[in-house]
Image 1 (cartoon, rainbow, N blue to C red):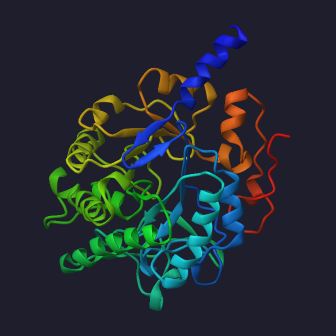
Image 2: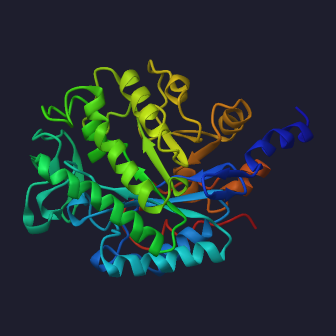
Length: 366
């Protein structure tokens, strides 16, 4: 292959695209990445402003998962978007990203049963669709700890839960974000409602696929009405078993979930293909069929490298490609992809918790 052909190939990743209300200069997305570096009161600050602004050449940054309510927290030192102090602290981050020419949306998070009583207000049990404890661990002040047994949400609590996402989306816009991504993936609360292993309710939020997709739809509907569908996206992970999740018929479940979301005209759907964490071992699932009903922007994620990203966009399989860990160690990842430059190695010891080391000190190309 000639150098010219190679550069022509990579050009597909650098075509501008309009995603809902957002105009993006390229097809490279920084995926949300939990780094456990929030400060007092689960606020952010100078460190996060530096970290995200260093990565502003991404077509879109999806900021780390951020809890919509205190009960939504499942790991120490993760940020929130429910207090005035948190909203104010995020403004420093969004201002820095915008000053560097970037675009940034916030991932809205409620962990549900993937939590521990030490992280819950008043030391209470975490909430879940059903009172089924997950075989999973969370990061607490004592290190990695088994999750606590949850209690099932009462039916009359669900309207307030939905409203907490709406309010969080409003707070995100007040904090200067360009939009939000509703986190409905990776074994957290909305995903727990979707899957029949974790959702054994007998009311209108359990049982049938229609009922189990209800919370996802109602949360996204509320957020879209509050801040505009063109600033609202959602993340799904049909096959991940993270958080001790599974479903007896993921294809039918997620095909229907996307059909319902399609009626809201959301800006994007962001899909983790395979097991969370880059595991792309073959599993029987038709992502094209899942995408079928959706006319908006389709973002793919999970273990993509340069060649795979080029192929995904060139073939029309996806509109954008999200990169996670490569963005941690390569603040200038889009440039490195364009030039086919080597990538910095990742320091796994600094992924979770800590300070600037392994966070803002990775070098860009000279």
